[in-house]
Length: 94
Image 1: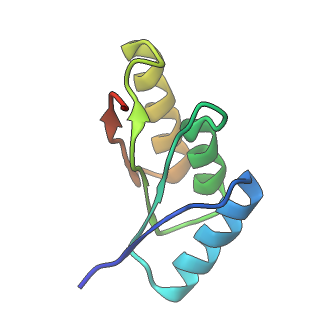
Image 2: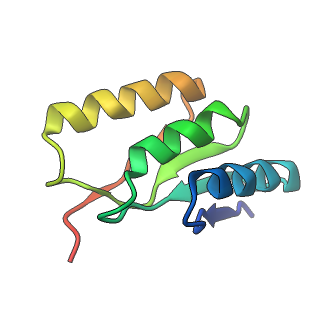
């Protein structure tokens, strides 16, 4: 069985620290969220830069907050930082 973990810390450093511990504990993936006060792609880039093997995903990246090109270039950048470990999930929010 494979396990993933939602990165729920309010701070970027907290999410990085949690992702490091998750990778060390053998989790397969960590997932970031996004709110009006927290850019999920920025947070995922920070997490990706500090881990080497764990998969990194966006639980939901708001589709209408960015143009499609901006979302795609952000995802390509994070995928490059992570060495191809990004899963991008988008949604419209509620």
